[in-house]
Image 1: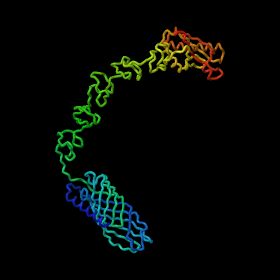
Image 2: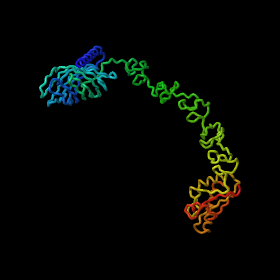
Image 3: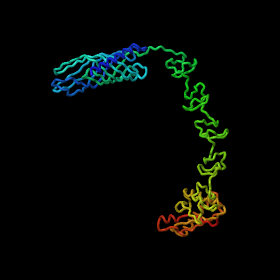
Image 4: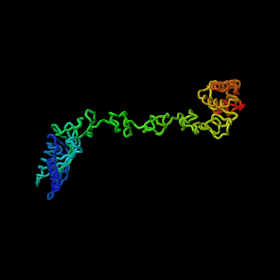
Length: 455
């Protein structure tokens, strides 16, 4: 173990010496002072004695004073108290160390004591022990070595964590805080050949024209990174990675006003009006562009033929998209759902206020469909028949059902149906369709029917 420590120390000292000899830049010398706490591991050699180590772990502390010679090299003196090793039978041995060594720092970038750095250390130390046991220290002078990490803040303070090995029987893992005193400036020859304010070592464009504004790398700004500098770029916010022309604007090959990057139809003929995706307009979104659409106002997403007109395969006047009976015989009379009209149609959903001929709002949707159907067949003659349940007198129910039938006719006339083709009649409680003995049955009997008199 002694040989390994000595080899490590020799290699580190040699590395420091070679670095000193070739250093071309050095920082202003700085003093620093630090203190820390740690956990020690102590293994005194008790072989050949009646004693053994009962507890080898303890807490300790260290104080150190250092001096930065160069960017990567410092010298440091320290006092370390490692605590006590507990021996069995009862006894304790404490450890105190005085030492002087060198540190070599490793940086990710060329920074002297800035941000995070790793370091190696090695040197010579003197170990002092005291104990209530009889012991003999064979060698109080020793070579020590260690390694750690140091994070330096801009205000001169730094945090350090390290693992140090002292001789064979003692080591300490510690965390400490240190403070450097004085400036930390490099002696560097600064050149700026193109006089743009960026020194040559940092200038990626060392031949920039005089008087031109540049960024921190010494190049003219190109805010959108399209390869065209801002000074001549007519489109300063082009997305990164997009192909541009010499003016810095995105390409528009078909010249439809939509750049290639967003153009889903990049070969649109010249002069054609397009939407925001660069494709010809299709106002009703039926898949047939407006320039070829014979029915440009068809409902969106309805199936259409090649001319853009909605399909009606059975020719019943109800488009396939709304036709619940799309295979009915051609030209038969159908209702609003596209199905063949029955001779008697119960208008389910036509409701009135209680004891009144006033239509409820939800009835209007049903009657709107009835109106569309009747207008489609202007020669059709129908009877609007009103019915009630058996509650109340027959005369009252006949009058109420007649008023309700007339209310339906009036609404249909308001929707454009020919009033001469409609007859309103009230039948009261006759011809019930359900059992009047139940609430549900009576509700079904209170209805309006459409009787087709002439197709």
